[in-house]
Length: 165
Ligand SMILES: [Zn+2]
Image (cartoon, rainbow, N blue to C red; front, side, top):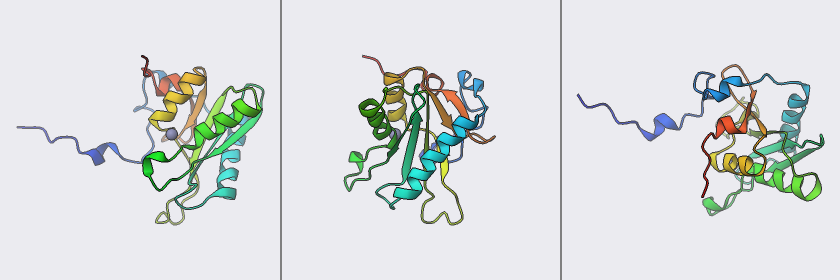
């Protein structure tokens, strides 16, 4: 009997990854400390201040090695592929105004209009942002959602085989 092909929607669940689903390297996920919680709050504060449906729905915050925090906002665009994620905006600020490093990074998204009662929540960086982070700061840590709540994993655990030419 033929197996049912995997439907695209099977892979597009917005449910957070469980620890079991994370790769072996990511099983070294670390619990968050007070600095990590402050980083999440910085991202949430930026999104609360600047949220505009469609135009700014995700914010990111990164802590550089010097301890400074840089935030960034997602930039919506009518031509969808021109949208810019929040992470590169934060990284650009860190490079221009700070030491350009990423010790820890987090992204948060605003609930969609139909998600009444939901709160701003931690989201994983998209694949393109994983590539960007690992290119610029291969030792960065990233806060991601898990079944057990947000946890911190190495960027190289999120992208073990990055694009190289
Ligand atoms: Zn992204």
